[in-house]
Image 1 (cartoon, rainbow, N blue to C red):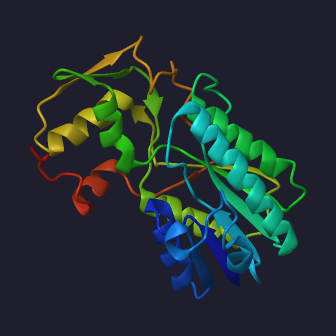
Image 2 (spheres, helix red, strand yellow):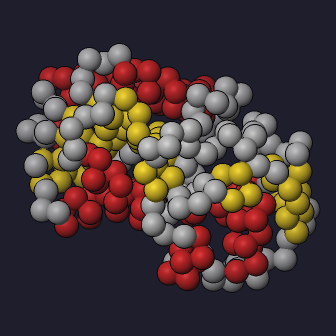
Length: 256
């Protein structure tokens, strides 16, 4: 099977390309690095030529509200048009668990707009909503820090390893289109403060972590239901947070 991976040089995309090639699929890794730009449309037709499946794991270079919305609207419209011309049989996009539950988040609004464009495209599709990645926990900590204190919401989330994301995406991509949403998540839900604190401790980072009911997730208030799957059929990755710490470089001391 020929699969085009949009965003194939990124955190998820590069792993997804490797996974698909390991299963002996023909894979096109498409990104600005390889001359494919979904915003301008450059190289899209060539990248999608002959592909049975297209997986979009690209992301906006800017998370500013207007910029991220423009990126996902423009890139998705261009991708849908190119996929239709190429007669692609399955269009898969990577989205986020909770896109429909955090209307105050500009990024989540942009991802929801992307999902709506895919759903109305008339193409066979699967929307894969993933929970946060372990690799982003450091960013959550840094974005929630004031002085020596990290204030995060007293809410649950269910993060997962990028390796699991790519493996589950690879399996979903070669299945028949779901014509809807598939949720994927980490093995277990845990308080955000617990996970952030464990990561910082593993790096020798002495910032204190506080779970605060009024703290926000990058500006958005959340509850225990905001960032966890709603479906009992959600697919779960197998890599726990402790295993990920042991097998990644996440536990290395923080650089001064």
